[in-house]
Image (cartoon, rainbow, N blue to C red; front, side, top):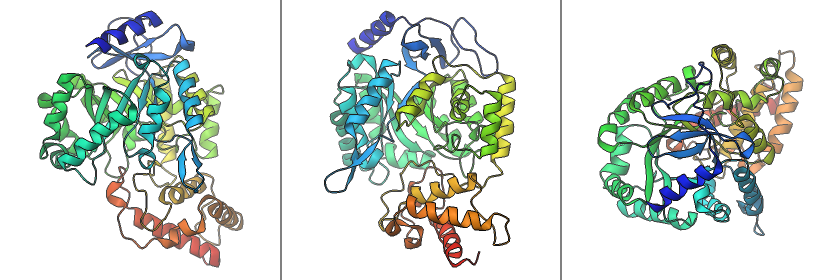
Length: 453
């Protein structure tokens, strides 16, 4: 395929050096790559680290741009729309500093992400970046709707091929069977891969170990080119809900030589907004690095990881992540043990595992579900959630919670409007019982307002 040759030539002229990174904890090595992907450090672009996809020779930046959280502004009618000008600047900076993987989906930002991403990327040579998008046929997985969504992605992204195409958020064989097999879509996508309109075919996973094992068993039939998994230093051994420990997910991919793409390295921002004493602990060990940099170094350290996604709304986040990965300083055994201790400490804080993906939105009753859950988590980490009026800091915590809550969530979108319709729960990749959590928060707020906690 011509675009494959062009891409290899592009990276050849960009001067990609060969210096493979070993397994996490084993430092850096030089030589042949491992099973799924290996790391190389480019001389230019301020030293961005790249991983070689040995299935096709792609040199993928270890930092990938997750396009779920583009900056938003209000239009003349008060509707939230993508701030295209700021988005363009973010994309320009990312590409200038070596980022070449951009991950979007038809459902991101209430359907606006693909088009905004396409507009921003079209201003750069097509061979200078990889596009990843998904078949997000959650609620309507008829063949007709699935094909329409697939074709619309090409139109929105202004491209005639997709580099990395995913079946979106598969939990096991039941979902895979109904959304992709029974309607013949998987056979269609396999033919698209043969034709070159899809260069790599994979899926993203949220689910149980049983569901994971079922999907891994399909590799012999479908020959997955990559898989996207949730991996961070909390989920490595302590995955919550019905999710699977990332350590097991990565091990099973390594066995089969399947490269992984990493999502949620910060757990929806929770690993950058940790309680103060944990932040102090991280800064003491590495004063020059940010709190978030620990999570990104962890996610990028396994050899089989091809790319780590980050939804970078603000330029300062993009700049910090570029710094972390230019080049990547792979964690050693002592660092990994330190982060495991940190994960154990983090478990003592009862936050709700919301990653702000907004799959639960829009709520039919106008509730801002992510804002409510994330505000609660922020107050937990800040020590501003009281257990009773006898708490030493009750008055301070009460005022802090109520004042910041009204600022964070408009009154007509607050928790007390939830009727428990349960429309949101089936869309949550973290398997949160959303109405239960919303009602719990609503009762807590009501007690704070009445001063009867």
